[in-house]
Structure formats: C-alpha cells, structure tokens
Amino acid sequence: MGACGQRPAGARGPNSMLERIVDILVIIAPIFCVAGVAAVITRFFEVDGKTLATFGLYIFGPCLIYSKLMVLDVPAAEIGRICLCFLLILGALWAVSFLFAMVSRKPAEERNTFYMSTMFFNAINYGFPVCWFAFGDQGLELAVVVAVLSNISSYSLAVYFAARRHHGTRDAVLHIFKLPAMYVVVLAVLCRVGGWMPPATAMRTVDMVGDGAVPLGLLILGIQLARARFHEPKPIILTVLLRLVISPLIAWAAVALLGIEGLPRNVIILQAAMPTAIMMSTFAARFGSDEEFISKSIAWTTLLSVVTVGVIIGLLTG
Image 1 (cartoon, rainbow, N blue to C red):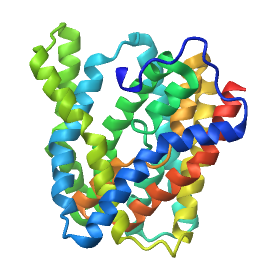
Image 2 (tube, one colour; image 1 turned 180 degrees about the vertical axis):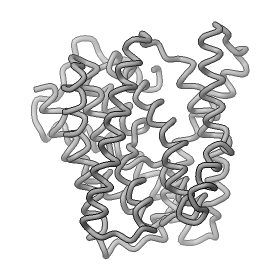
Image 3 (cartoon, one colour; image 1 turned 120 degrees about the horizontal axis):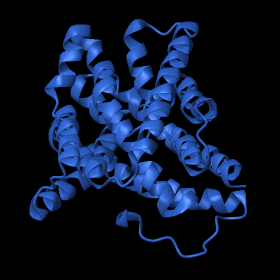
C-alpha cells in the first residue's frame, strides 16, 4: 500500500464539491499525460500496439495479479462477502448491458465490445488513489480485493468477449486458458494456503514487472486514441450512462441486498463507479476488437467521471 503513501493523521476529506473535483483531476491527470504522450508519438512514428498488448497479457498483467494476491491482508470471511457482491454486480451489469444492447439494436458483432466497455472498470490506477483519498489506508486495502477480482474477471470474461468477435465462442473460451493469468491466480492461492513465500529477489522482480502493467496499458490507450475519431460521441452515450451512473446504483443495491455495511460497502460502491478499465484497450488490440470504440469509451468515461465520482464521494462521506 506504500505506493499511495500514508494519509496524514486526522486528515479530513474536502468540504466542497469543487475541492473534490480538483483532487480527482489530480488523480486522473497522469492517465491523460501518459496516454497523451503515447498518442503524440504514434502520430509521428509507426507504433505496433499489438506487440505491446501481447507483452501486457503474457508478462505484465499476470505479474500484477500475483503481486497483489500475495500481499492481501483482509480476513477470508470479508473477502468472501466482497467476492459474492462483486459477482452479483458483474452479473447485473451484463444483464443490463444486454438489455440496452437489444433495445438500441446493436449488431451482434458490436455487443461484445459494448460489454467490455460497460462491465469492467478501472479498479487500480484510478480506483486505488480515489479509495485512498476517500477512505484512507483501510479503504485502500479493501480496494485491492475488488481490484484483484476485477483483474480475474477481465482476464477471463473480458478476454472471451474480446476474442469472440473474430474467433467464435469455442476459440474464445480456449483463449482464456491460453493466457497465464488464470494459472497465476491458482499459484498465488496455493502459495497463500501453503504459507510459502517466494524468495525476496523473485518477489521484487514480480512486483517491478507488475508495476509496469498500468503504464503499459496507458501507452496502448494512447496509441488507440491517436487513431480514434472523436467527432461521433453518440455511440458512447450508453457506455457512459451504464459505467458511471447505473453501475454504482447496481452496487448500491447489491450491498444492501447482502447486508454489507460500513467501509466495505463504501469501497465497493466507489470502485463500481470507476470508468472503463484501461486493460480493455490491451484486449482489443490483441484480439482484434473495435479498438476505436474501446479507446473512446475509456477516454470519455474517465473524463466525465471527474463529476460523477465526486458526487458519489460526497454521498458516501457526507
């Protein structure tokens, strides 16, 4: 948890919506700075985003998952409740996204990309600092649990959606098991249950590589943004509505249904309000999904979340 530093003792959250928005702008500024640099470079040089995406899927992403799983310090019962709630939210998001896709008459080939933009959220490089800012170190610890679950679902269900467009249902399922992420989860669980910790040098290496997963995702996002057209915002409206408004409302209902209260409740709701996951750009580049739609979804939801996340923080902490 040291990446975010220590919250000052007795520090209070901002007292006005303007201060909240300024703080959130400070959090998301690095996202657009890194992606912006990548976009500028892509304008002048030939950049292969698919190669970067391959490195992310097979090296950086799995190291990030293993690193986070090995440092979790949350009671098993609490993890179980959060896991159940997360699955409920994910299922509800799919159902609502499916309904929206049918009502708006989205072609079958566009639905999977739409699901990727609405169901999977930026739980790490946006969710971590926001949860720490709002709820301190204990909130950040719980945010890690949600982020790990989000990563696991991304490397399974989101990979299926990304690959299904060009590879069919059977091959899309097989792609999940061709990636190392799922085996890394099993390895980490076995290590935790067996009480075995890899040598310090090995863990430092894994941590170092895992820390590069988010910056790599931002570079891929920048490459896609450089090639996207932003004069057609209408296709993104449903994504923005689902990801930034309906998703936290679903989370609010899920925690109430399961009787989750206090800090876990607040962290789950806040994480569910995060914009579209940057990792979706990696999957889109690697498996040939609609990269332009995904990159615009990430950009617009991240930009507009400055307001929506500020409002939700106010409701949760006011």
